[in-house]
Amino acid sequence: MDEESAYAGRWVARLRGKIIAQGSTPEEAKCAAQRIRHKETPEIVFMPPTQGFFDPLLETIAAALPADQPLYLVGGAVRDRLLNRHTHDLDFVLPGDALAIGRRLSKVLDAAYYPLDEERGTARLILKTADGTRLFLDFASYRGADLESDLCGRDFTINAMAWDIRSHTLIDILGGAKDLKDKILRACSPSTFEDDPVRILRAVRQAAAFGLHILPETRQAMRQAREQLLRVSPERLRDEIFRILEGPRPSACLRALDILGILPLLFPELPALKGVTQPPPHVHDAWTHTLAVLDHLEIILNALAPTYDPEKAADLLNGLLVLRLGRYRQQIGAHLDSDIVPERSLRGLLFLAALYHDVSKPASSILDENGGLHFYGHDKAGAEVIARRSSAFHFSSDEIKRLKIIVANHMRFHFHVKRLNEENKEPTRRAIYRFFRAADSAGVDLVLLGLADLRATYEQTLPQETWKAALDIARTLLENWWEKPEETVAPPRLLTGTDLINEFALTPGPQIGALLEAVREAQAIGLIINRAQALEFVRQRLSETAQGEK
Image (tube, rainbow, N blue to C red; front, side, top):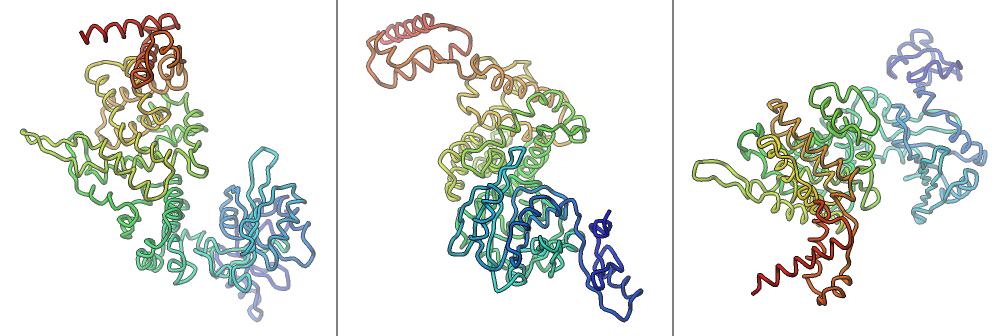
């Protein structure tokens, strides 16, 4: 083991290149050095974990550069390597022409080269690794006069560190490594949020992701700049919100945004949920319930993650969940990782739908003659609300359609659970077909949301039999979606509109579509298995219609 690796993760004091003392903080290292060499002033530096920094890629890049060309790894890549977290995004800064360096390195690394911003001198390389994953390497000229100016202009101290890939030295002028160790989120400057208000959302997200405490002065600066979010483009807000919803602890982020007074600026419809009483078996008001749904949804998805983790299934509810649905963990993972628009996964859309699933309860609340509280139609009304909000954030039309489907149909799952739990009636083949006809692939999301919604409704009062019934319904629906799609979900078409026109002398119009749909539903419930039966079915249907018109 070399001298530097022996001190990995520690602060050291160096004199004339030799390590003379060490400590867990810069102050400890300095004090230890002064006790030994009290007349001399040592250099205090952090020795990063060697596993994260000394890798072949960085060594290859350093060797390919001109001898006098500095290059620094910066930002989140340095932070993640200090945390021994793997990252696919590497950001580099340098003095001079970043575009030229990017082009040069693309040839050495056999990577694709893209000029991201020629005016500001930013280039991206996309490198495919041996295991098939892609690395994104961004090269940029200094933002400012020098490296120090570049680092001081960044958002938070934990993201304002640089790694000199030549000298293997951490450059940390703002104390980001100590803040990371102390689990503190600190803004780089008083103007951090005024310079870019989106950093307010990033602060909340990174605090949740890394378990950091936002310093009071940083929180105050966030509050003071919150109104500036209104001048940020909807697209930038959408993208940062989406990162929150896709990331860890989204409910904690929403709570923080609420405390900071930011929630109404982003989601003006949601504060009305606060204090809205819900009848038993609900144990929360509508807002607390919504946040609890996000919590339970995250717990459920973690338990059903592609890689099985027994700690995520240690309690009774999650143990039963994994027992009944664990066979679909790979399919669920692939489903949630897929997207409609690149960089915005179905997982994020599901959490956004969960956030808005009960948004119309305040407006639909009514009391019956016996004093019973009801929220009739809140699902359909909520679908229109989330459509307007997602449109304001410039989501795509297909994403908006999916969000509407999830919110509009989120009560369907509970209907089937109640019938099984109270009447011992399982979903029929017709019911399964109609469930997925209404939702298509979003039916998977409805199942996951339904489970989270049920747990958030009861919390600790959830009867085991009710949870078992919910898991049985979930298993039935997912089994039909992934294992029996041609039987009950989307039977292969036996007839076309042209067939009906030619066979029965029909004219084009809505009747054609209605007949084809009736045939498909009859296939799903097992009444039709071939083309001849399909034609006979249509013949009978037309005959019944003609008799009814006489």
